Length: 375
Image 1 (cartoon, rainbow, N blue to C red):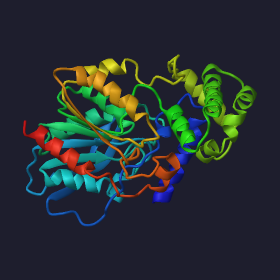
Image 2: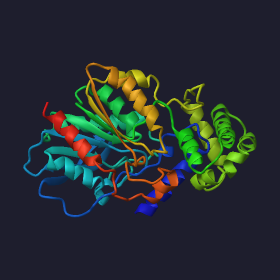
Image 3: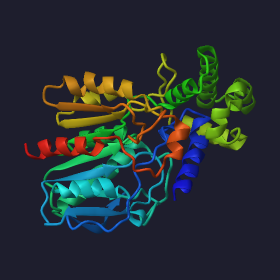
Image 4: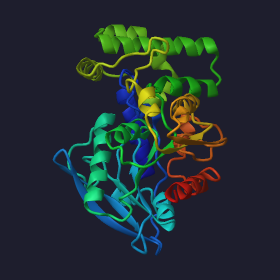
């Protein structure tokens, strides 16, 4: 299973990283802690549930505390990539901990994954993912699921865009736990730069390679020729780390497909960073949140710019007198909050499936959540 996940992530980066207008968080490759498939404890009762979004029935797992009561309910929001929640019992460690403190949870497979209907779209928009969250919350309330009178969100990586959109659409959502969240811009450039620095590249080499990547992005977005793209990105494409990510040079057909997508859904580019702006007005969206928010970051996250996100949260959510922002960072943790030596992308891929989480990761969440549900 873990090898399949690794291969999928690297294929995804080939698709979105080389053309690189549409990073779409695929370059934030991560995998949530995989399931401990041992028998669920008596404190948790698990049911398979389905709900409908845009004509597709999505299938997931609803966990309720063993006594049938719940103080709250947490919707678990995925990061990037395919899912197999039901068959592989994903997030078991997290879900069982929530249940042990009297909190229900709900998580489902994306369209076209597991038993969920529809066609999987690796580039599903964050707005579409947010609509799934809102629909799930409405379904849980309609079914009068225990805890559904107080629903909050837990999400990792790409969910840092999805959750605020869902919170804005459904103001009754009560709290948010953000793990390895994102700022307003796509983050492939950060992934490249931070991993090249780990490998000892000098600043001049990094600047040259990033310049070629940005030029490739510009040619993809503005309709340049494939020949121009190849000429402009020669050193970038031959770089060993880029080849590890992509496997080979992007084909002409794939390049033209990216151009078509860019023309259909153009993104605004930040003139200072050259990065695609993922959500317009993201700072205002965050500043409008008036709920308790817990933000967790690994200080060795080499996939997304955690320091930029942390500052953004502090400058927005943290300045709202009606919100309560709590931030916790873990010095030796990577993007997945796994204990890590370097936090580098290749090390992170090799660690997929590991359950060696940063010390106090779970206890930090549970203690914070205890305070929230007692309010």
